[in-house]
Image 1 (cartoon, one colour):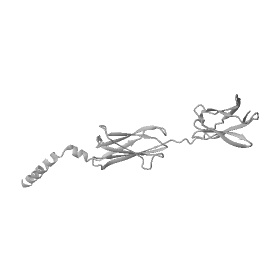
Image 2 (cartoon, rainbow, N blue to C red):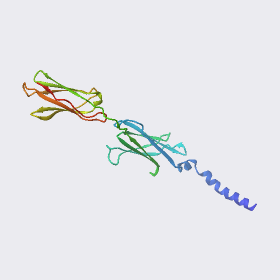
Image 3 (cartoon, rainbow, N blue to C red):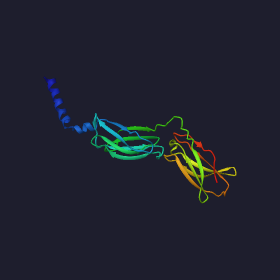
Image 4 (tube, helix red, strand yellow):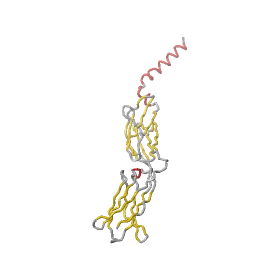
Length: 223
């Protein structure tokens, strides 16, 4: 009987302390599981990265989240924003995708202590296929007022390629125009002709893009 009474006395002494400890205090001591995701997109596109913070499998609202996203066009330390998890335990930030983008999310308590972190990485899919050959065509014609009109046509695959128009004089080629091809693959230049009745020769060079190869047109002449 003496041992049983002793155990009851000890348990009775500890019980009030356990009862008085708030349940929220116990929950606040649980570790935080952090996950972060970046939605798919293309380089240059703005998307919203999302972080989720859970405690014992339940949403952890009201926690400070520090986001940092880093890419080839950001400063070395990246771009930092601060927000708070909502009732669902989530926090979001907008990022601009680059060929490679890293988003880091750090979850902090009220005292600024880190409770958990996660990192997500986005990498653009680069086409490794053979580039499409452009085979652009340049045509020249005379216009009134001593002006030469040059028209270049190329396939749509040449979109965003840089085109340089060159004039040949005394065997020397000089660049006189520079244009970026649009979606239709067509560009027209009007060039003032200082060559009198003699023909002036022109040709164009097209730069390569991710999907198309470089090209040089045949030499054409306009009087």
